Amino acid sequence: NRVATGRSQDEPRLMRGVGNPFRPGVVLAVLAVGALAFLLMLYSIGQGWTGDEERNGGEHAGSTSLNGFAALAGLVEDSGYQIELSRSRASHDDYGLLVLTPPLFGDPAELTAIIEDRRENGYGPTLVILPKWVAMPVPEAMQEEAEAEDGWVYLMDVNSPFWFNQLGFAEGGELAIGATKGWNGLGMSGALPDTAQVQALAKQPSLEMFPLVLDSEGDVLAAEVSAAYAGDEYGGEPWPTLVVFEPDLMNNYGMADEDRARLALSLIETSL
Image (cartoon, rainbow, N blue to C red; front, side, top):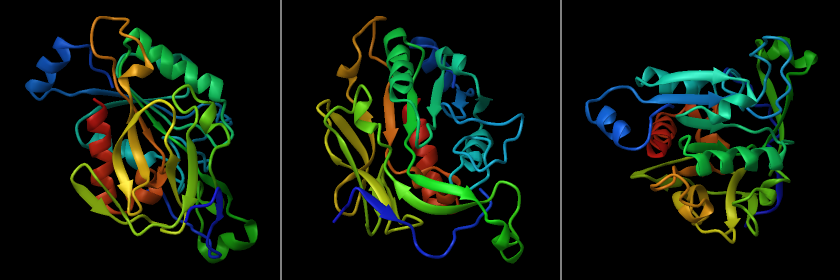
């Protein structure tokens, strides 16, 4: 059974973490000849970086912490895609795939505005990876014993983002955290790094979502938002919006497993 929140295991988890196609005919032609698709990955919304420091334990594409996404960015780039990492909110209207990694205490109004603007104006697909981890820098008393490096974090707890059902596509939806035996989707299956603290869509929003990845209990770990979420403003099918409810499918914690890494890349390619 799932509960609204869950507490992480007693032992610390310390570990180094480890688009832009035009629409529509040009993209198909480009992909047909095997040329590179373009990928734009926005670090996150309102993450609050300090200076140029990237190894700060944040939930963004420059972070090597467990809850960061440096491994995903590296995997996609190594797979032949062009990546741009950006802190700028202005990047949301660039053409291509935009990957959003909002923090646990993000702004739902801002996130909704970005997603709707991209769908209505045809900028390209959007993939949103929801947060769940409450992380803090490794306590000084533990650093020597753990041989902690810059950017390592201590995963204290898990909480679903309070703002989820305030998103434009999520009204009436509900997240829950609980245990599961594994995941399956896109022709693959496997386990999660913490099988007791898995975040899933437990209650369907009023707007239909099409499951892409499920857990062992049939709850949704990743899905595509119905095309009805945005009108046909630019003469064609709207670009997809994908939502990953379980961040361990794509963060550095998840990328430590080959099956999850394959799934993460498949979710990226499904978005394009």
